[in-house]
Structures are given as structure tokens and as C-alpha cells.
Image (cartoon, rainbow over all chains, first blue to last red; front, side, top):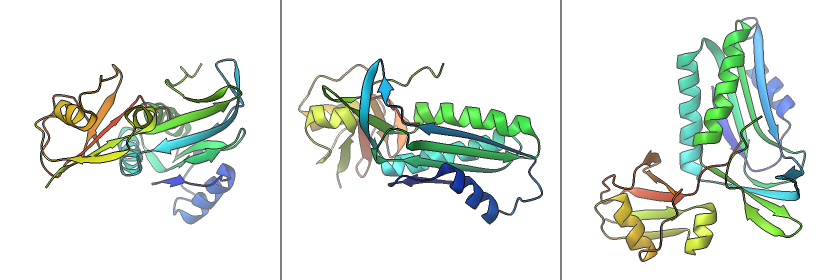
Length: 145
Length: 75
């Protein structure tokens, strides 16, 4: 299990490959489920040119660790990886990566889905968008649909 | 000893301070009143004591870290 905060943009696909190569689960996993959340250039029908992601560092890391532990208790997972950006973010850049490895597909798929929903509702991150008419704090998560 | 108080995101901008300390309080609600000079509390404000979500009537003690912030919007 591994989770960390990134201050700079990162390549989520490379992070998955690197994590897989460094872990000792090769030849054990039959399923890898991933979620990558990226910045859109719109929100609520308005153009968004830039975003700043703030967090509460100590509490964020504590929650990411707790979520990984709970996921591993709920599902038969071999490994998990969570990376979340903070700081200045531009459209198309990744914000969050969640990857779950398991022997069979259902555990990895269900855990990955659960982890992103829990993260969005518990981990203390806040987005501030820059729009044509100024900056605004995002007040609610989208419903995901 | 004292209580460390933190405000994040839009709440930090509204209150005008990110970090402060107070000498003594009985509950998280008292911490809010003392740290903000009894500013009106937004209905959706969340509170954490020592990095765990708590309630405004949760007790606090010297040495605690109490944080106030708006609903989270990560991911």
C-alpha cells in the first residue's frame, strides 16, 4: 500500500508501472483497476482556466492511509496506490490516481470505486477555480454522474 | 499549553487568518467563538480535533489541534 501527495504534475500511467515493478506482487495479480481524475476546462457551464488545490497536510495523509487500510480489510486486495495533486493545476492535468491490484477483477473494481468516493467525501482537499470573471471556491462535489 | 487553531480554504479567507492559538476552551464550539471573536458560523462548516472529524460539542483540551474548514472537494 502506498499513498502520497504530489506538488507537481505527474504521469499516472508511469506511476502505475513503476509501482507495479517495485512491488512484490508480480505473477500474483490478475486484475488492476484504476481511476484517474483529471482537471476539466469547465464546471457548472463556465470555462475554468486554472485551479489551485489546497489541503490539510497531516490530516490528508492520515485519511489516505486509513482509506487504504480499510479497503484492504473490506476486499481481498494485493496492493493499492493513491496519488493526489495539490498546488497549481491546469486543465487536462491529473488530480488523483487510485490503483488497486487483486487476484480477480471484482475486488479491484469495487475497491477502486469505493476509494474514490470515500476520498472525495472525507479527505480534506479544497479546489479553487479561476474563471473569466475571477476565482471561486468549489463548494460541493459533483454527483459523479 | 494552548490550543492550536487552523482555518482552511474559503473559511480561512472569510475569517482572515489561517493559524492562531487560544489559551483554553471546553469544546470545539468554544474554540470557534474564541478564535473568531464569535463570528457567525456557516451552517456547513466542518471541524476536526487532532486530525479526526469531530462535532462542535466535542470536548477539547490543552495541546489539541482544532481545525475548521468547508465541505471537502478533492478527487
